[in-house]
Length: 469
Ligand SMILES: Nc1ncnc2c1ncn2[C@@H]1O[C@H](COP(=O)(O)OP(=O)(O)OP(=O)(O)O)[C@@H](O)[C@H]1O
Image (cartoon, rainbow, N blue to C red; front, side):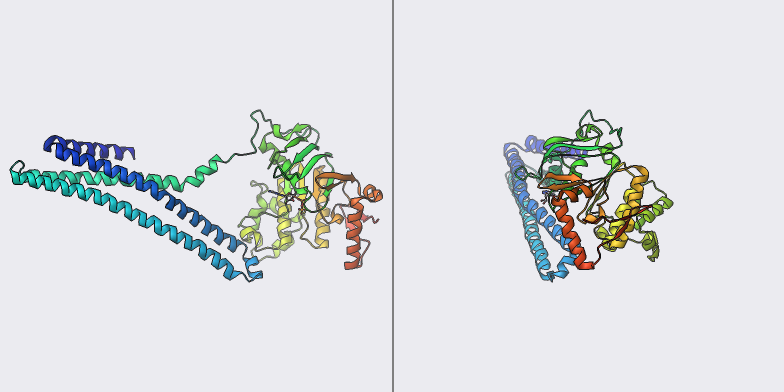
């Protein structure tokens, strides 16, 4: 770019110099006025056009967002017969884009017309002066041709500089969103002295007087203190929205606590490297994020270096191998965008397979089996339990269905961002508190729905009777 601009600028100065030196003050004055007028008009009009380009970019982004949003949520659109509404929304966004695009095009035409007008006026004035000079005998016909050529010689580089300036401004504007992204403050920063996490005690997690809220005026966790012992199976239960998943997000350092601290084996998680922290924690989230790729790829995502055999072994432990094998394309089956081509239960089991493949020391299951039928859930839980016992992993289960966690070493009941009670299933039932109420409510429901009261839950090698109140 610089190699083009420099010779162009040189060319303009030379032409102006020749016109001034060769043909006197009047030609010099017209040249100066043309240069100043052309530059000022180009800068002013380009600045004025900026808002139209910005509007067009915003309208284009809105159109894409509306289109992607309604396509991703196509099921909701169909369930509620809202095709017309979505078409209207998209149409509105396109209309706005059309309106601003027309403004961009017309303002560009205005810029080009103005530039041509300035240039043509200069050409006319100079030709008039040259013709006058020829008529009065001061200039020759050769001079007239020379002036004509010199003025044209001025137009090409002027046009070039004008378009370079315009394109530059436009490109910077198009990249504005990108630049704005860079200005966004990243809340989670690794401390300069961060050290890799050392699991010296096997992964004991401690929340010490933790206060946290997504918004300052709405605290979710209030002075929360709890300990998750190493190598134990812990359950966190409580009413919806009380902050169970928030505990995981804080542990994973998606957010930092506002007060208090979180320790893993005595190390404040703000003082350990993010990579080592996130490597140590495995999560099966509430909504399984899947890539629009094959089942095998999605399972392998837990460990990109895993062999095909390891992927199959993980799928077998997550109780999904038989189903996948029955698919016509087996492990090569594409799951579709966000996994829309497989069932909710299959998605959850894929997430569990991933976790088994990652094999982290700390495991977090956030409603990991909520979409499964009771039998598959029991079989999967038995496998998960046997892995936990075999490897003495620290595990945290968030669950609403208490039957899936009643056998935990410790159950923590959260209410309004604080620990309402904690203990084993038996201790909590004996206390007769919130857990006991939740348990009774679910048992009553189960009785009414299924009429079944005693269920054997296979938690590994031995079968345990579900303790009832
Ligand atoms: N990113 C966020 N920004 C703002 N508020 C949020 C965000 N994520 C969650 N919340 C709010 O924080 C509260 C706790 O959310 P959290 O997901 O921890 O609840 P939960 O106990 O896991 O609920 P559930 O059992 O329904 O999954 C909820 O009221 C929720 O609306």
